[in-house]
Length: 83
Image 1 (cartoon, one colour):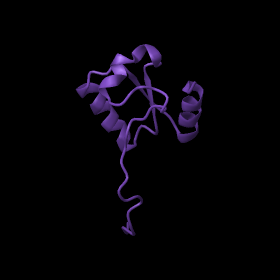
Image 2: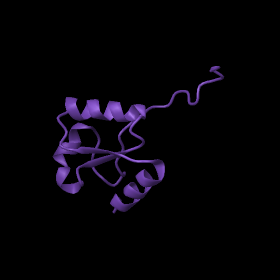
Image 3: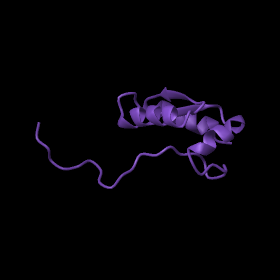
């Protein structure tokens, strides 16, 4: 395998919520659990963001389930959850 170039430089992985929600931090997720379906939808289970999210769930004692999905499934789940 030859390393050609980075796929993405300066990128960051984050948990996101729609801008109309008043959630500004990971800590706010539990405080707003009544407004959410308590599921964090992510990409493929082998993606690095999955292990980072699992760590965040543990460290912040989040009351959320983590669901992995392929890109199309993730997009559909997110679209369905936006008001």
